[in-house]
Length: 247
Image (tube, rainbow, N blue to C red; front, side, top):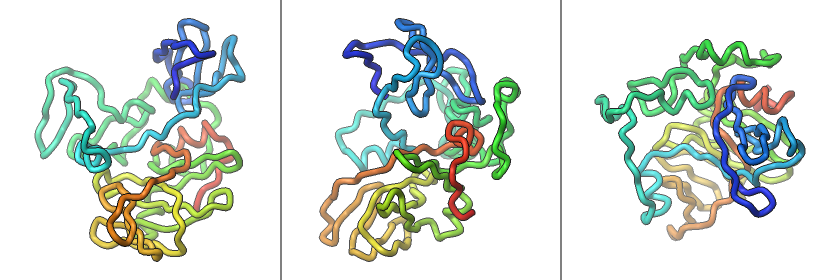
């Protein structure tokens, strides 16, 4: 999100939980903000939005360097797990806690699919959408006219790559092999399939290491819809009545 209001830099911190999600507090204006959409939820600036919000894509250091070799990598002392070993020294909760996703799975690089919601989060929940399991992982897309959720299990059932339509445009939903998480990008294609770690499109283009390449291997620009990889409860409470792909 863009931390400026009327051209001035403002400062934000976590104020607590609402609907099981962290809520941002803006010290200068005493306003509470939704950390997914950037919308002001309570206070003097209700009706304003910080944005447009960017996409928070899941990636590891290798993927970041594949996308831009000049990327600087900062290693903190926070405890993390890699290669079956615990690294870091500072005692801190894992990144999966950030959206009430429960404890991170220490044996993998991703959030635990069997996580149970932290007891501090549960009392803050509003009326939940029971069409999907509360802690299910999936990819949520939203646009001016559409809000749609793609369960990760469904994406895998479709072979890890398939095409859908979003507001009249073709969008590719695929599993990023490096991060083991789903992602979405607009494409001009009629069919998609996977081979090894690549996503192949019938127009000759390929997504390799998170980068879109043409037939000759030349890098192409990627346009992505607004998206977030999250638990079902969080997306459903943020966007009530959201569509569920496959239903």
